[in-house]
Length: 86
Image: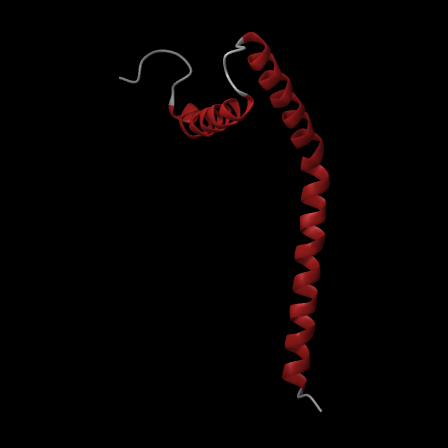
């Protein structure tokens, strides 16, 4: 038979995992609409870019958009709203 301390530990681990799973579900439910809207927006922008620039291949555009969006998200918060950096 398991000792009471082991049972308490197993119950704690079970409820902790349950707590994490419920939290992940709630987070996913809250963020899913915004994420889906952002994905749709990016698809429209990508298709518009490809329609406007016929010389760019589909697979090249994916890499350019990916690197552009990651670099923007890393640096935009550093820029002031108005004025110079000095």
